[in-house]
Structure formats: C-alpha cells, structure tokens
Image (cartoon, rainbow, N blue to C red; front, side):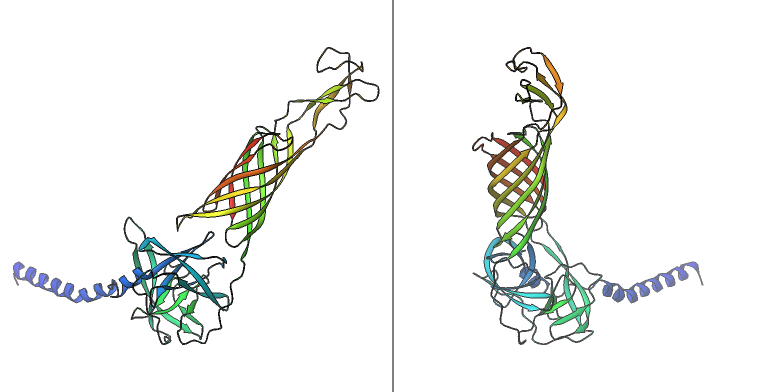
Length: 393
C-alpha cells in the first residue's frame, strides 16, 4: 500500500469516528426544554421590609407560590425577575406542612398573561424533573439556567429529588418534563408538593409577627456631656407588623470629655478644693421606636429607619490622683492663690442627663450606619452621635 493510500484510509477512519462520536457529544450538552422561556417569565421575588424570598407565578398570572417566608402581617411586594419595575402588592395565605409552609399569594393585579400550570398528577420515583440551578442577572432580562435531576422519593405532601449537586434557593420550582409545577424547594432541601387536588387545611388567619431585633454598634459623640467620647452599644428589642420596632440600647462611652478638674466644696474645716479627674466613663441606656422603609435592592436590600426615643447617661466621678484643698475657708483655689493641703479626693460629684433622641439609620443588608441628635432638653447639652454596626432584623 502506498503512503498516499494509507493517508486516505486514515482520514476516512477519522471522519467515521467523528460521525460516530457526534451523538454522544450532543447528549452531554442537552438543549434547554422548549418551555424554559415560560419559566423565566414566571419567576418572582417577594419582598418585605426584612426579607426577600423567591417564588413562581401560576395559573392566571396573579397567584404566586413560595415557601419559607417570614409572616410579616403586612402586604407583600411582588415583582417578576424579568420586569422588576412592575410591582404588585399581595395578601398571603399559608398552609402549615410539617416544618415548612406553602405560601399562596393573591396579587392585586396580574403580573403576567398567565403563569405556569400546576401538575395534575404525582410523579413516580425515577421520573426526570427540572429545577432552576442558576439565575444570572445582567443589564437586561435575567438568564435562567435549568438543571435536570430525578425523583428519589414520593410522599403525600413531599417529594425528594437529587438536587445536592445543583445550585438552587428556597422557593425554586420543581418542574416535570412538560414544564408543569410539581412543587417548590424549601430551605431544608425537601420539595413541598403543589397538588391542586390535595385536601389542604384552611389557611390560618395571619396575626402580628414578632421578630427579634439584635444589634451591636460602635461610634462617637460630638458635643453633649461626653464630647469626643468613643461609644459602644448593644441593642435588643422586637419588631412588630414588619416595620415598627421597639428597641432598648445599653452601652457605655469612654473618653476625656471632662474639663480635667473637678471642684470640691468646703468640708471638715477645710476650704474648697480641686481634684484631677480621669477620662470619663459613662453608662448609657436608651429606649426608642423605629419605623423602617424599604428602598430597594432584592439581592442586597437597602432600608431607612426613622428613630425617636429617650436616652439616659450617667458618669460617676473618677479621680486620677489626690485632691488639693484650701486651708482658708474663704479662699477658692480655682480663682486665687491659696494655702493648699493634699487630701484624699473622697467621692467626686457625678454627672447625668436625660434627653430626647431623634435619628435615622441606613441599613445595607446587615450593616447599619446611624445618626442620633440629642437636642439638649432640660440641663443636658445638645449632642450628635454617629454609629456603625451590624443588626439582625
């Protein structure tokens, strides 16, 4: 066989091999199902003053389903991921199912011409199912990536699927091969079934939500009793109705805000005196009400809190050394030259103040930037407080 014939035979064999491998390569990267665009158009975000949860539109486009939402006791704001500028308010009904809840949201107007269809029948173990594995947001409409897996278990109210190797979030719809909704993933990884024929209990009436408020802040004070002091505060309280919070603040201020000298009255046969003081250590206790407003940002929410309340500060007298008293009852060492005696400082006079507090907090996720104005009611001088910290709810 000539070298040219051998080369031609080798090329023919390579072409045949590539043709044979082409179906296998195509099978490794299956095309998106034909209903993928409808899924992208039906995804919604449900936003409250405290939380963002994912869900999906079903039936007539004015009903949304989701799981693991905190009951806020107020109207919810819903928008499609594909059209975030259109926002609807919704009232929620919830049916308790084991450790998770299926939420049914009734919107005050449609967000789409139609939503996804709810599957009429239950799947079987081994059936293929699809779920959203990733949502990529860019300058335009979000790009939704779907992942395929299998049903591993079926129960009356639950499904189990192999989703450990797929990226997902709670509220992600699980779809059958026809693009119909079988259920929604909850944060524990199980699927809450959505069955139109299920005998579900009547939705419980929604009450007042009570959520904890816990925070920690560092900052500084300008003016007031403790000008230039460093402040440290711990916050604890409760939030009601999603937006109103009652919060106590306890902490202290450390600084050198005092004049450095504390006058002492005449006592025990000695005249008035003076003692050098240490840096101020003040205890602070406050009580305030806050009203929260949501400004936007589904992935990184931004809020404004308006706050009003009272703050009490107490600074004990702390001496940094001995005291000096005048040996002449009529001579004041702070105003004139006097014969002085070195004595123990004793108990120095303390300072305290009760004042109103008005301010605003800007919350970026869990980070809080705060400002408080103490207007100087009564004997308390006006002060400005600036803080930065973190908070939950």
